[in-house]
Image (tube, rainbow, N blue to C red; front, side, top):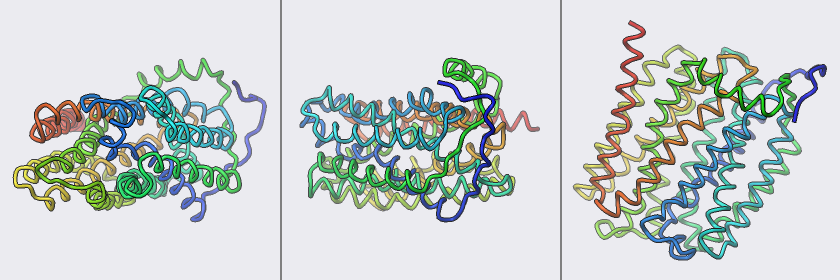
Length: 400
């Protein structure tokens, strides 16, 4: 698959408020598909034949699929017309959601979950698309606004799926999401502008270039490793906390867990704030604060579990969501200031790396909670940002 080297790319359209809203809503709606299953593990597992010890595979495989899509699908945005790629990926997502809703056993369910993750990586074509239509001075603000939609989708996915599961069952949650994806596909076909990139690589050349870009871009490696550890904490927390709240200590129903998750959605407010901070030149300060904030959130989570305080658990949820999202935006804004012709590949490598962290966090959540309870979740949650902060200190020394 190649683009025509002699073709003269059309001028990139400028982003408008209406288009910003569409891109933010699209990112949020697609990203939500990655997280609908998270609070429903206890319902899905027995229904498709997954034991409690491996139930978090429901989330882990979706994240692994997402990571594969970031490496294998998203780079195509640097050589293939973007609107065509995006709409095909959304159509595939719709089909995968239908298959998930109909899956009778674990194997087809997990296979469909893998494809949901793979095709949902299209989100990371929409964010660079927004950046490409924005001038440099306002790029952080635009990225922050679009990413706030993505984060709202991630954070609202849990309460929405919790509430709906009480009404239509967990299968109905995925069926309704498939219908929503079809509506989104029609909107994107109507309003998304075409963007033909100027790259002339073949697909194999494009994939080979990923290692070259990774090796030659220290900023990419640093920002990706920061976020690897922080996103591991994000996924660890949100995979384990429904198990803790549904357990004997709290005894919450699915609807009550959904209300708890809804409170965490306020963390999406950090995206535009972080974008403005980055535009003002405060990325390093903001990064240190975000890492420290994630560490502090698990201190609050330990206190909440120890004293059985839902207020402290809610503060922990707000803090982890706020800080992880802020650090994502700091990293994206920094990377989008680099070479625009490789922007999709930079973004794909960045997101793929930290989603591997998310897969690690979700994979260990069920076994740790099942074997050792909430204190083990907290211990892992403190270790991840501590490692991130130690790496952050090397940046401080380099700047000195």
